[in-house]
Length: 635
Image 1 (tube, rainbow, N blue to C red):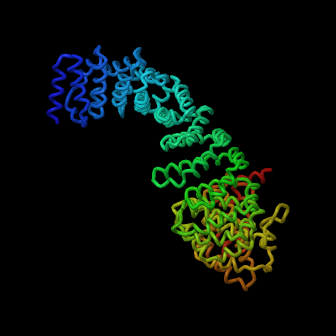
Image 2: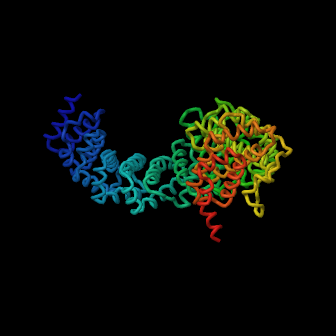
Image 3: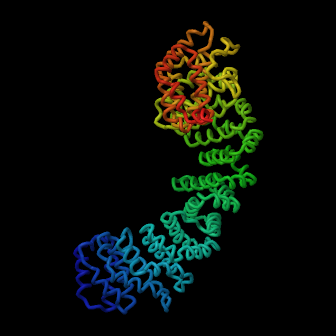
């Protein structure tokens, strides 16, 4: 075969140009299936002459040959010459031709498109020759007399422009300056008027929008274009076209304004209806990927506040609740994610509890709370339930419905995103729920796991939530019982706090004792003092205040527990941690944190051992250096 190619090339170079012979030779060359067979030949100069031949057929076949030959990377580089590209651009300037035939323009688009493929040098030459304006002018051709070749021209026009614009940000921005968006809008308007008839037109035009979106920062389409994309999606039965529309709308829906626009245009309901119609056909990986993309767009639109509030008043809300009964994992997960987004206001959350939607979510979770169940669904369920449990009126109802019993088995799951949501959900649930907090402090499995995660997780969110949940359990189980011991505004100086704490108070300390019996719990609270976030530092201080009030001021019957706590605090170097806290965070401390810090230090001082330990770390002097206290003194 190589020998035959060599002979054909030799004949082409040595035979004088005549329409019959030359055309036949070019046809044989372009029929070669392996373009790499041409790699050793220098053909650019020979073909340059043929592209300028007066005979249209010769020029057409020459362009067709170049299109085939330049499928090879080596020949792409060889044909990247100013003369050849200039000749092609000059020809495209004449399109549409007086006779209306599109055969020559089609082959030139193919040739120039292949030369441009992954070839910045060719793209730069086109830009230097101001050929980008020539290429973009091809988009203005809306009426093609050569009906037989119209579809092929539309295809190769799109391919040429795509290969050119893939050259990057500079070329895309230049195209924007030349009005490419207006041209594309006009084509899409035509296509949207009759999607079935203009399917090929849309399939070869929308990729240009995708390329521009990726290369032009913050490219926002006109509202009318977004609406047209939504309409095309609704009308099309072509999965490739649907995918293009969905991807473009995904890009645009990052804007809250577009989210609201699409919500009001009914896009979410359109997607819902399409998914209901085609869900049983999503048996291939491609169809499933398309289904997921559509589902994700519903959820994305619901992340906007205004769009979420608008859609709450539409049938979409019921549709998403209905999907909680779906056997399709993607529709089920989407329903849960959608409801989690709707549950961003107290009134919505209360409504979901009143309407038993919360119970349906718990039923789904009860069936999917194991190690082998779908992680994405678990994450979505915990996110939704976390939101539902935030409003105070909901807490008892959710607890009574069995939330805690349903999620505690999930402690065996060690996927960080799920663990993070699990701990956050538990923390929101115990807020103000003394009875539940007391029960959970006694849950050895939970506490041991929290201590483990607080030390060993590579996921910062899990570490933080583990520590915070332990602190919240202590606070909500015992703060109301020991509040009498914490000085409030107008009380006696904090220094006198230890003198006025009664030695006994009538409340059950067993939950806290069982919590402290787990190794590492005191260390966890002490380590939390130097957490990155002020809110966690404050929560650690409150937890330590409660431990100090409960145990460091007790009668002899609690002496053993008090001694163990003192030993643990000293072993964990609480003085060193307090010193670090003051040194690193004193400038940003709020009044509340400073008051809790003072309370904590003075409560610890009620123990002689701890008093000596704190003095070793110069805590009194460090307290005096806190700016907010210095300001009070100055005043």
